[in-house]
Structure formats: structure tokens, C-alpha cells
Amino acid sequence: MLLPFFQWCETLWLGQVVVGSVWLFPVIESVHLLGLALLGGSILLVDFRLLGLGLTGRAVSELARDARPWMITALIVMVLTGIPLFLSEPIKCYYSTAFWIKMTTLPIALVFAFTVRTRVTRAEPVGNTARRQQLVGALSMALWFTVAAAGRWIGFS
Amino acid sequence: MSLLAFCEWLAATEGSLALHESIYMYPIVESSHVLALTLFVGFAVILDLRLLGLILKQVPVSQVADRLLPWTIGGFIVMNITGVLLFYAIPVRTYQSIFFRAKVIFLILAALNVWFFHSRLYQRIAEWDHAIITPRAARRAGLASLVLWGAIIVAGRMIAYNWFDCDIQPQPAFVNWAAGCVVPPPAP
Picture 1 (cartoon, chains in turn red, green):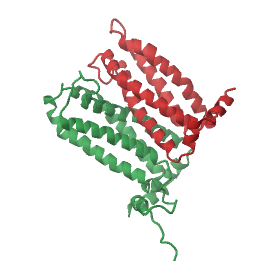
Picture 2 (cartoon, each protein chain N blue to C red):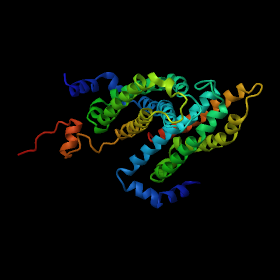
Picture 3 (cartoon, chains in turn red, blue):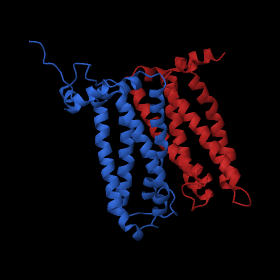
Picture 4 (cartoon, one colour):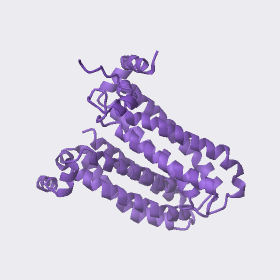
């Protein structure tokens, strides 16, 4: 059903530019990876804290507030580099299970990050919030792990 | 035994062949290498940004370093184990990759930077632990770390591409020299 859309994506100028270049794909891919490192640090810093690991001496809200601009920067870098990577091989992606796993979990991870996770990291710790924090931290890590692992696996298919 | 001969011997071992030809093990090791990057480089970046006064400004540098270091070391161990396995799977081509060689040089420089930071700067941490603007040497170390780990990621990713492989000739003399290619002299 979506195949015509992917076929249309293949005709787009941006993808054609990437396909027509020897080094553009590897370079964009490298920046995608640099974004991954930054995204990993800014997300894990907070998720670890939610699980009671890492910088336990600081408030969750403080870490989340400081990490947030870096997380958003990393997300922007990843999306901006991910789009040309996708446009250079949309048909391959269409037939890749890993791609569909990534594209299913990515929106879930994003919505989760900016709704539930944001709310929990901003809340003042009152009463029995520890378990909810742990759950949110674990879910966040599981979601982003799936996105990243599936993303890497697109290259193997 | 030369390093090249050692790599050739390694490539012929059973384990190397098995890993090279495996359908799932190689991609799993490769993926672990990439995903561990989020922990290892990710947390290194957090400390570097703190040294540059760009994140966690209210948190003492020693607190960031001490609490994250065990995880950074854990990530580093995973990166090393998986990295050695990736080399073990494709020894000769990797050894003769200019990107791999560049990565090793960057790794040595990054290690020197870590050593410099912990043996010199960190000894006097008490003097600037709470400073948002850390001493110039600390900021330099943080910036050097960011640049070096970035370069290591890029060089590592590029190992996968065969533009400068020894079996693709002719290459510029510099490439053959840097990659240590054994090129037969041109036929007379």
C-alpha cells in the first residue's frame, strides 16, 4: 500500500544526490553516528538516574533540565541526517523488517520522551515515586535501544 | 613474525573464519560495538561538556566524573571486546585499512588525553571542582576528547568502505604506503 510513496521518495532530488556520490552516504552516516553518541549520553544520563544509577546525588529534574537541550540537538541531527540516508535507498528500506521496526518504535519513543518521561522527570519526588521513575527509565532505555538496534540492522539487510 | 604475517595467520584460524562467515554473530558483534558507543562515548561527552561549562554547571566536576566513570569504563570494556572480535573476523583487510590505522592513532591520542587529564588536572580538582568555567587546560582536555572520540567514530565507520583497499589498484603511492600494501612492481 505504501510502496508508491516509497517509489516517489526514490525520485526525490536529495536521495539522488546521495546516490550519485561516493562519499556523501558514508559522511552523512558518520554524522548520524556522532548524533547517536550525543543522544545516548543525554538520554542515558537521565534514564540511569531514574533507575537509581549514575548521578544519584542530584535531583532527576536537574539532570533532565540540563540534558534536554543536548537531547533535542542530537535528535535534530539524527533526523536531519536520517532523512537523506533513507531517501538514498527507500525501496531497500521498504522491504527491510528492521526499517519498519525502527519506524514503529521511533514515534513511540519520541512521544514517550516528550510526554510521560518529561512529566516524570519534572515532578518533585513525593511519596512512592521511585518505582514509577524506575519503570519510566527502563521503558525509555528499552524503546531507544530498539530504535538504535533496528537502525543498525537496516544496514545488514 | 611481522604484523602482516600475524594477521594472515589469524585470518586462517577457525574462529576468525567462523565469525567472518557467520550470518548472525558478526552483525550482532558489530551492533553491540555501535550500541555500546552510546554509553561509552555518550558519557565521555557528558564529562567533556561539563569541563567546557556547557552542561551540569551546578554539579561539581568530581561528582560527574566519579559517578559516570564506572559506566564509561564498562562501556569501554564492551567496545574493546567487540572491537577485538571485529578485527579478529577480518584481520588482514582491517590491518591494511588506512581508516583503521588512523583510528588506532586517534585512540592513542585519546588515551594520552585521558592520562593527562587524570594524572595532572584531576589531581588538583579541589581547586576548580565547583567552577563553571574550568581551567584552560581542563577545557582543552574536554575539547580534545570531543574531537578525538568524534574522529574515532568517523574513522571506525569508514573502515567498512573499500575505496583504499590494497586489492583495489592503482592507488596513490601515499595510500599504499599508509596502508602498508604489498604492491608488485609494475611489469616492465
